[in-house]
Length: 259
Image (cartoon, rainbow, N blue to C red; front, top):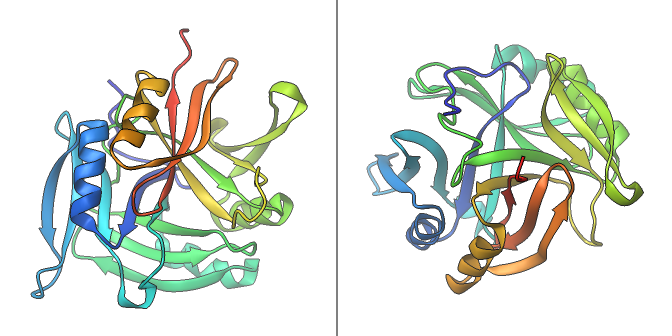
């Protein structure tokens, strides 16, 4: 069972939904992935942070929307592990990025910062204290892959290499397409690719593993989501499809290949 107790710097280690309707999102993803939830109060105004759980492990977060994002569709955040968030954040501006918030402590769970790379993709940095991030991954109902989508991959990948010390490895995809793998310690831990549709802004994709991609996509639609790209096969990688949830957050499903 792929449980995680630590993450090397540069590795995606947590995903978090920011949504205008936490209760609707809680029901949607709970039904889709079989999640239970831990409820964490964040202030004395009744606001909470939901942490989904599966098999006794923390999987993902669901947070409410800040007032300044009123009217914005829901979206998934990706976090990257860092050893020293203050030191890494100090490199962001010099590498062409923007620090949007932090660094700041999240109680005793860890310390974080929210940044934007030079091409506009937002991502968070996480220095673990009591919480390392996702405790269970690469199994049905848990995150399995994260992917940078940017129209200027040279600029974006150079930025992450400069601030995190990660590598990038070209990978040939089926039908002659190009794909780039995020490499930490010679291990692929994520990917990068240009947008496949016009109008898609730079962002980080979130993939969740499922036992049956077609069945899970049908269920996702039945629960109120919408298909962005129908399920398709990537030889040697698996079967995957792209969706939006009822509040507009984009996410992907991935079924492992038979081998």
